[in-house]
Figure 1 (spheres, rainbow, N blue to C red):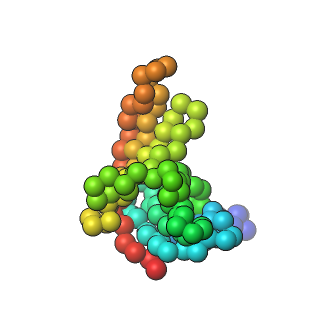
Figure 2 (cartoon, rainbow, N blue to C red):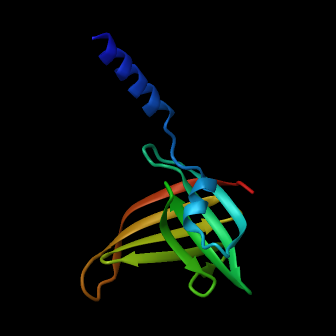
Figure 3 (cartoon, one colour):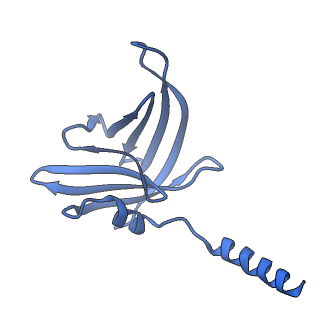
Length: 141
């Protein structure tokens, strides 16, 4: 019985100490090797129950940049200089997989990131937002 109790306590401590990957750890797994990091932002959720995300901006060539939104070492969506939309004071990019789309909109002057999760309404009908989450970001580097 003592062995089981000690094992249970150790298991609880191990779970309590387990942490999500940091932005720096996530970048090691997601950025191309030739990328030069120019901006890294840690974004904390403004809604309960959401995990933090990282916003990374890296130079990948002459006048070519890569933008990534990362959560737990997984790229949620990404874009390059050619595909990102600069709208007013915000940068917006989307990634579409099958019938789902994730859109990141970042306002650097407000340090605000919005993630919109959308689903296709129907053929030729576009996408409808299912969930939207906001994050407050701070520069990490």
